Image 1 (cartoon, rainbow, N blue to C red):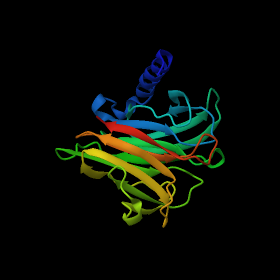
Image 2: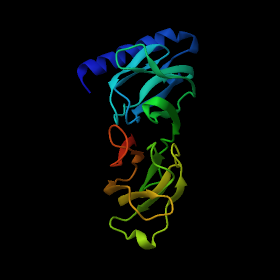
Image 3: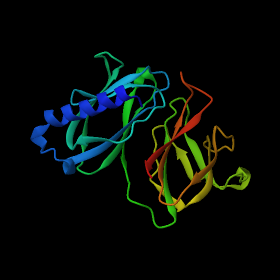
Image 4: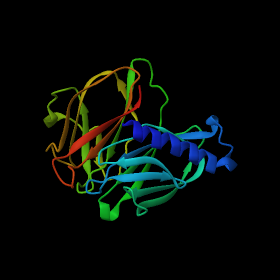
Length: 229
């Protein structure tokens, strides 16, 4: 992030807090919100909360960090960069002290928000937590395999089956270590996304999002977001 980006974000957050003073916006009354640009053919966008710009010129496959946003009913707009043209205009109810990931999903013609509540409670000692999201609009239902690196899929049972577009798993808690995530069209062993080896350390919480190539379609890939640690 550039210094300009940080300055715009911080200034907008102050403005949003001032504009929403009726909500008793002490730090303890905030929610945390993270935004992901997941629309493969949409241009760069700005993100506004209650009319105040909080993210500037966000491009495809870019995710913000968590932003402190006053809890309560908030209006979230996603505008085409440096314009007043909104491609998403949604009212979102944010709970005090809760954390959310808002993903702009689907193609530009049908772009919409996918709002997920994040669970940042630490896993048990020695474990990690991983959540998986299907964010590829041109791909049908999928199976997801979470295995040891190099495991043969021929005899493997999917960790998650028949996951639809916009489907999100709960957080899967597993021992820390090395893993490989592979995604296939449902009912097949044909790998569409292969993360390769992922090394996950104890205490980490991660969200993986299946995404398309810029412009849409293949090759598919995955975004891995650090929810915590």
